[in-house]
Image (cartoon, rainbow, N blue to C red; front, side, top):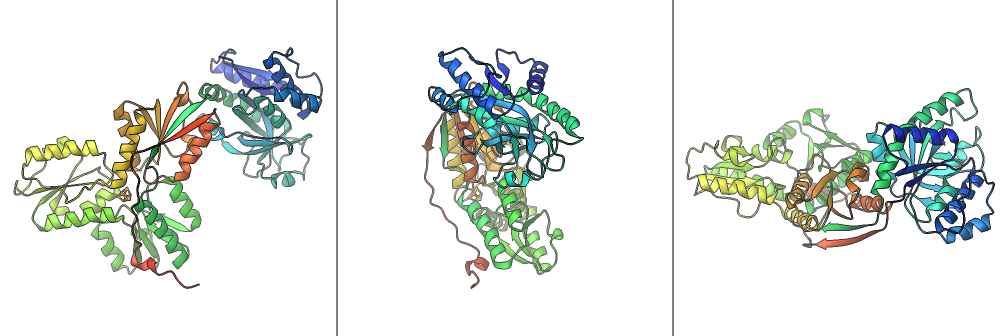
Length: 536
Ligand code: SF4
């Protein structure tokens, strides 16, 4: 295997990177740092010479061989085969959010004539954050001279967050192959490069660069072509789509802020998007001011919460999924018929708390087969069981079997409590896991149905991880992996799957295949409060 080439324009940058690699015991056979020279002309010359050397048409040129003839460079690059290239060095900040010592991972570099995309940037950024660095991902502009005070705003207006003098021409040597750029910030618009802080800014930036170096080796080990199997169905279910639409319509109809009790659905991206639109998420109604509008989340609430809202005259809209509401109705029916209701589910989950609240004196939570022994019905002929809607089907069925063994007359719900969306996503993840070296499940850590997808894939014998987005993917997971399965929990936005596929595409060619086990057409109506949109 050829080593990764890391291009460092300056001697001090090359030295910082080499020291970082040595400290992590990464040999030169794995990552080779080359000094490519200062400025865009030397960078272009190095790129053209590197391509030629690789193609065996000439000996490798030196970084200081002078400016490249651009026509010659272009024709050399046309001969070139894709290869992975990393650029590491210091750079200047254009965004006011960046500080000296921060690290910028380029999502794209451009010098105005050459633009190179770096789709794997979120993967490297996540890796650097886990290494303790402050990291921002965004476009980097390559310019042909030092940026002077007063020139930053015009460059920032192009969308770039940082600036350097070499990355765009250097990355032409990748010839469409995987490419990354790491720039540690040495100067900012407030503290430009020619200032009394130049030396201290440079030292701080080089320290960050040294710390960043080992992650480049992990990035290189993850590079390679892959097949991606997409579990289908995946992402939003009808209940989640309805709940999100309810908050959006409430904001439109009532104006911001609209309070939402608990996370509307268990997903960090969804919650952050709605917060930006004016939703305020609270844990309890006591945090909601009098007279405010409140939405109850998709997971449902207990009668106590409804009564508290009514007592306080709060205007409420209920986003409880109709399939959760069905379980509540079953709990009330069994309890009023004198049954002890065993609710199979996970302690502390909002849906479970809401359902238990329907008939607390007649219900008992059962989390495992062992819990069945603790059930104490007044009449052993009157035991019923219900389920949290997002359980793993195989896990729940072993508990149902234990209940039936102990109470042969035990009765269950009229139709399955584990909902169609949970069942379909578990079937889909099982199908991809059987064919994959690794399964990534898009979803947040507090999403029950997403966690069950991870467990389902693991039961098939495939390593599986829950990720909120591409930045959560550890590059080590991908080393040596040629087939990646991707699934998504019912609360994970479809866009996250697209972001993960795009990031993997930045490591090499990706071929995607949909593995469809079911098609879904379920839709739920909106609550009556929101059915009538206000006239404009
Ligand atoms: S996962 Fe099932 S129960 Fe939960 S919101 Fe979606 S459809 Fe409703």
